[in-house]
Length: 166
Image (cartoon, rainbow, N blue to C red):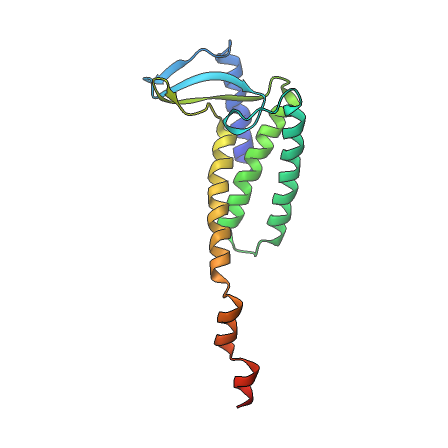
């Protein structure tokens, strides 16, 4: 978790120091990968809720971190995939939370991918951690639900009380 947060903070600091002023694309791999400094006052994919976005998303981030902490505490020892997923989402959320507190303009984004005018929303290391961790966590939770037998299956596997009395 600390590695992701440090990598996020370091890359954002380098982006702010070397890519200013914001909004000017700098090709890295042709048009496909560019460094473009932008400040996102909203959430993922440019979701913006007006002048109070910073405080709304700051509150949502803290709430999400509390929920993730509870999920982590409920995680069975040795469940490395679930633990990794929670750590990725948490570290990414924490990295962007630091930006929300530190920068009044919003979260620092700088990774710009796409072809021509067809571009993915600009993102950062924290966003990659949140996205990857969220997909992993969804997969883990989906599979946890699939492993538990449905009530009817559990009864047929153990037999009903009427079957046991025969």
